[in-house]
Length: 429
Image 1: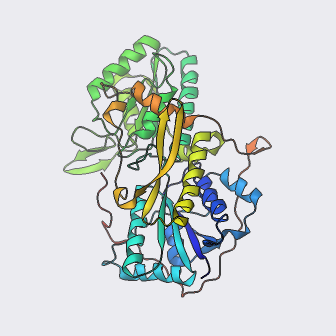
Image 2: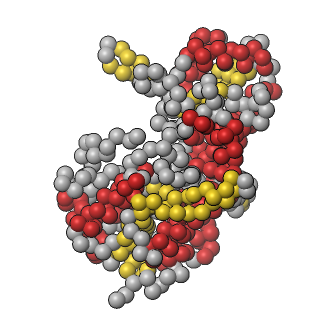
Image 3: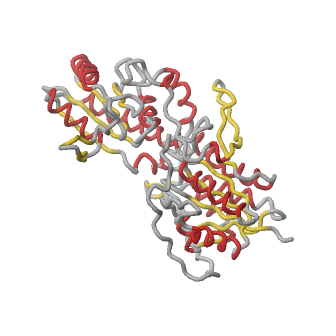
């Protein structure tokens, strides 16, 4: 029997190193021609799978793979598309299985976060229920670093390397300016429910009064009085203060900081960083600058961590090795073997223990006053930003690669996926 083909999917939000995982899959699969035929890739993840929009990666040479690994974003495209449960949309699963059948796909490598691992689990269960021979392996990635049962997630190290560098640089600028009134710099970072990215900014602090002086985390209810007191003390002492705000910071009653209640309805006021900046300005009259990092924090490939790049490649390669060895229904996970010296390996965890679950910042990583991180967090996070995996530069700017792969001819009737039914995902937590 000839070797079955593999399909690689990128899913959810991007990272600076997700394409390293793609390279890990493609290059490792080529070492097992007796087990794996061609490696296909879906355009825009699950949507491309349902639409039967597939690339054949066989045409990618060594130079193109190097260029892919050094490029941010998803070179094959991604999406945020949740599958319905089978009983709510059986046609959706019939379509998925038909695409697998039409292209002789026996391996599915799904590269995503905790929500994407739920998608992988759903597909694995559907294939088994219908007797379709399909091995499903998850490949982790998320700048949020919130996948459970892993020491860290590929994408996180590069994101916090960029954020901590930006906080340090902007704060040096802040400290160099003279002003008759206090100055505050507020920087908002991603993190709706987990404060890993905000915590990572704490790596920038290399002294008692070094920035960021305050970090607001989703795991800690916002206390305006405690925050204001610490902020004012800092400005009185050194003349300025840098505040990192996770987008998901909440009041004690659980409502997001960026919302207020008016006549029983929540009204969106803007980002959490803007709310904090406005509070500071109105209460103290300080000069306030506010920045939102948004896509910058997850796409800064020019400052990627060498550790992160290596781990991203390794989980892709390990996924193929696991599949060839017969694994199914698992996701790869980075495991820490030692912190000093820093050593790690890649293991496997059943999808059912990961899918749709969310790992939050542990108490041991949060300072007692809830407004910064502990030395234990810094010791844990520092190895993740180690080293530089620089892309090629041309004319002073990074040179990034854009694939020019044609889509494979469709073998099935055209299909346009319908939007997911409401509330198909169970609450994360």
